[in-house]
Length: 153
Image (cartoon, rainbow, N blue to C red; front, side, top):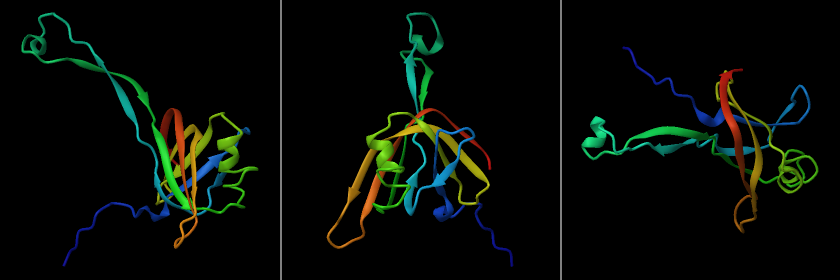
């Protein structure tokens, strides 16, 4: 008997890394990330409809071309570890949110460990949560600045 299986990857192995501003960049894994949406890219629509005689114009349809691209945001949730060096106010996410506006390198490694996404961005959202009957949680947002590149590790 032959069983077919999907080529999909189980997402549990994906990892998020924060890079420093050194040359070469040194990446450090963000501790205890649970859920992550790597990026939400969009593109501007430029309306180029004219009063000319194009086929779509003469039938009442607007025409568009693509404009600027926006890498969007990376969002993630982690276990909130207030004293961890990747999340604290000295070297971690809280530092990058409250004390530094400079975009810096980020890397997401695929669950297989074979592919990576790299981009520059800054911490634009930082939201710790202490629910009464659950774990301490952290939701964070990275605003992507520039292109997202995807390549082999």
